[in-house]
Length: 218
Image: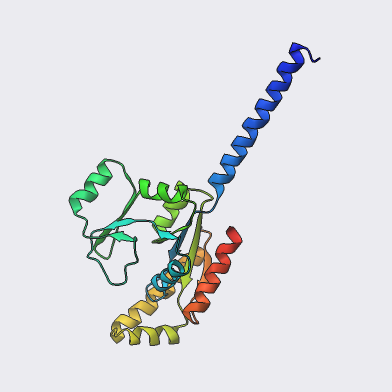
């Protein structure tokens, strides 16, 4: 029959092994990919592609963000709470509940830490459409748990055709094409490890390419 010392040592080894397994399991759980960000210039098709992904994967959700602008028909389900007052934005900042507050095209945008944490604790993937400055912040907040995809627009000829179809003026089209070039150049020089997808075919093809990238990280 084992003596007291042997039993004590055996108990310690078992307890240590259980603790090590628990730490490993927690690490694995916490290291899983949970959030996918989409970035890219206007005309790249981000919203259309994200919307199609949500249709194909019904359990995937948007991470809620707040914005001062009015609702748009293109807003995706659960993506924004709109018409948020400046006073509320200032209160969120004062209470330190936000991960960021950004201003873009005269509107304010904010994402709260609680909404990101909810996504990180979910068993399903969550999606976000973000500017590059916000992509950096969320990747720093949740290292190893965020996949960042940059949607590249089609070539100039196809992009011009799409923008004309949307009814934009020649001046607006020229500016958007110029902006797209700048976005692409900056993204490729960025320290953010983007996965690039060029949307130069059908929506189905672009969605398929995005899905294949996501599968590599799951």
